[in-house]
Length: 136
Image 1 (cartoon, rainbow, N blue to C red):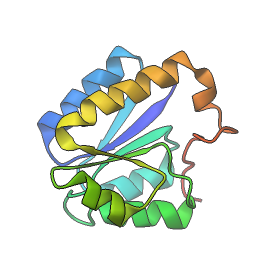
Image 2 (image 1 turned 30 degrees about the vertical axis):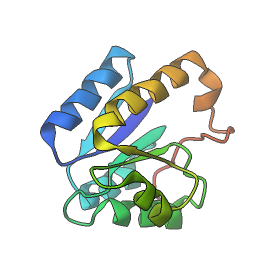
Image 3 (image 1 turned 135 degrees about the vertical axis):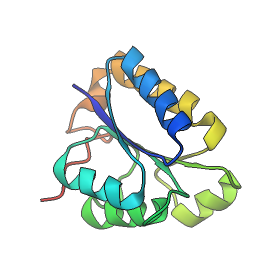
Image 4 (image 1 turned 180 degrees about the vertical axis):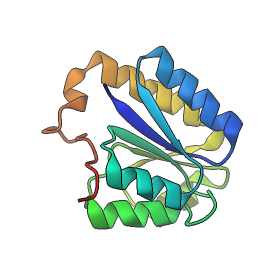
């Protein structure tokens, strides 16, 4: 089963994303802060990750740093959401991942889910959108 990690400290947003995933039979794990997210990444494989840049305790930026160090530069299956200026966030995080406003995150995640369901090759570990493996 496809598995997605949601890193979001607001319960209402996390629940909305969980519901979108469940409709397409995609398992969702939620982390309420950056440390919780890193713990989950060390023990599970995820097809995609949605990160609130402003979560507490080791922010979303800390999770991105972890991913870059452990996975490398190919983070095309990462969505970073912000309530601030998206263009500013894009400049700070660099290319290779999707940056969206928090109020557009569920729509973007649903689009990603539908694409993954419609095109199984997006979930193939040998493709550009390969799963993010757990830390070993």
